Image 1: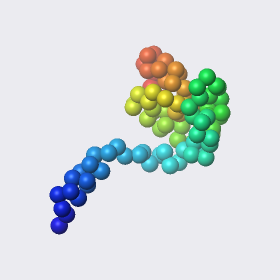
Image 2: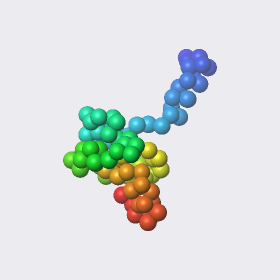
Image 3: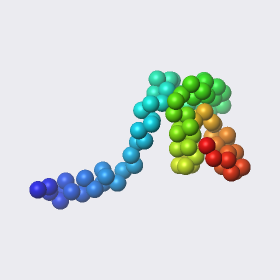
Image 4: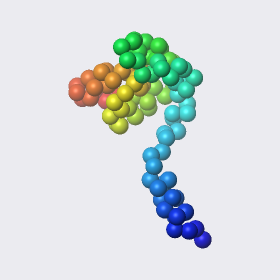
Length: 91
């Protein structure tokens, strides 16, 4: 029988968000992490990786659904995703 501490820890762990399975399939894991969060530099390097990624649509949907405020997701920059939301375009 689990102790009350173990039960509380299990409840906390269960409440944490799950990492979507598709994330493990993304090409981004093998790319330079800095390319996903360009400051004033071009996002071209990240977008080039996204163009050949099999989960690019899931990635963009995830970013739009979760209002992701940073980085390149699904081949789109923060500004591009904001424009998509504003214009009512879905992934």
